[in-house]
View 1: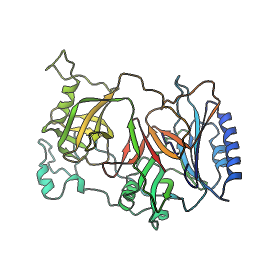
View 2 (view 1 turned 120 degrees about the horizontal axis):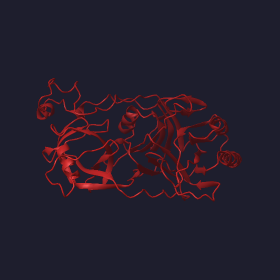
View 3 (view 1 turned 90 degrees about the horizontal axis):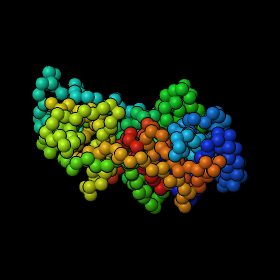
View 4 (view 1 turned 30 degrees about the vertical axis):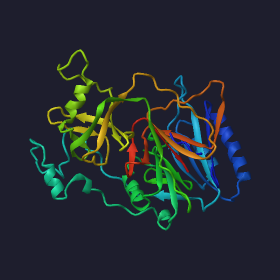
Length: 411
């Protein structure tokens, strides 16, 4: 979920309703009032509309040709019904926020399963583990096999005072993240991976920029400030609990962890899953519906990133982690699993200053009362996507979060 809080030249509002017609009426009133009180004749409007609304075309027409944004996933009421929502951020001053459109593409898909990538591993029989020390000595380790870092989007190339960047993008956004991290390394970044919309608009993902729809790339705003720095996004992860003790990555190939604390990585996880009454028994059966996760820890021991564990090979140790980034040797990790307790509904309330916060995961549940027709959240830009979000990180560089979590940034 994305959430924004009010600073100079910026105002944020989120409208949520159980009725699509009530939401449309409230949006019409809001935009009419907003335009009459705006200090700019042509303010920039960033929006995120939930894809379940039956009148998306009318919503896009109401926001105007100067708008940009995309389609998000629906929020859920506690009893399971879908809500309709639209989040809006208005920038009246062009010296405060600059709109951008990126066409930078991402990288190839993640390696899956027990095999390490063939273009790196020379042991084509794969009957024994590769010699990782030799790779490091020859400079051929995974951390040095990065995609070339592209240039910034044109709108950002001449700016020197970017404080933070928020955006909507297609899921394959690694190229944009690489450009932002390289050229704007001190700026905070937060992005929503646009909802999947093939059965809504006929496009895999739907982004809009100055009245035109796009399926790829990204759209967003860069916030400018010559005097202050932006804090890193605050991260939290929903309903997860630790499994066992932290461990260090001692052998790795790309996104496949081979050993933890010099022992078989997959076997370590299986031992943690064995029940207390069957020690030393056969490995536990893990069903397809069960999910386990790997948390990357900061030097202070807090979980800064969480990734899905896709698969494991007990005989060779390979544990495949759902990330396009290379896992570094020496990284400290924590196994995680979902708590058996049901997740608590997310509390949504007005904010005193604009915040931009993201929540990813399947159908996030919010605190909603049947007595409400429309909830107006002043100072808050709130949107959600099952595809996840991207965030800059205290661990360095930006990453893609595909698990249930929340990132909040004050702009």
